[in-house]
Length: 256
Ligand SMILES: [Zn+2]
Image 1 (cartoon, rainbow, N blue to C red):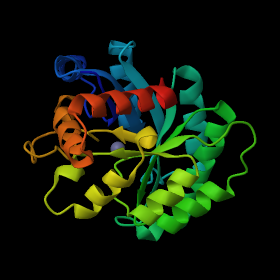
Image 2 (cartoon, protein in one colour; image 1 turned 90 degrees about the vertical axis):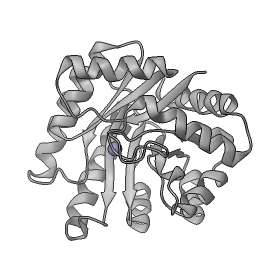
Image 3 (tube, protein in one colour; image 1 turned 90 degrees about the horizontal axis):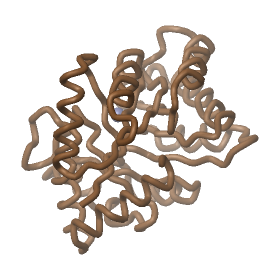
Image 4 (spheres, rainbow, N blue to C red; image 1 turned 30 degrees about the vertical axis):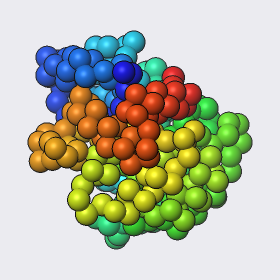
């Protein structure tokens, strides 16, 4: 079985613990994963993971909704430098979270829009977080004056409803399902996870957070994606092998 974890963070810069996480992923059938940044620390650790296993690990660098202590211009200059110094497959994670930080909505939108423009310039897909910010996310996506590339991207760890999913699919996005789909109270996520068409569906761990049932509460890692894949396959009435194959093919098509 070949699994592609499209969203994993690394929180340590200790070579040997990153190597251990990558080795256990390999043993569980994770043949490829996306190491995702979002802050200075996460970006550095993602670069380390990629450098340890350049054949298996793809790299996304960016500034998430919490990186607002400096001006958007300074942060964007940093991201631009990182993009030119590293072989990135995507920009991320970027996006909006009005659940935890509604007070910074304006600044979040500016930083998000700036990085979408960088993705256009660099012709890279984007990895987008959106929480309690449906309208604002669509507003920013629709306002960016797309000049060079076409908008390509993933809404990661999807927890929205099906009408919002429809609007994102209509804009060309893929939708990535995390271990939340296995949580007892996440019926809305299961409804959306059934709704996404085969050719737009991705899976992810969002590790080290959100370990799936039956490992809920543990520190998540890419190896655990087998549980999410098996659960999602059952939900969609296909074999785990089939689910792994189609989500890997989708991930390869957008990230390589
Ligand atoms: Zn994330």
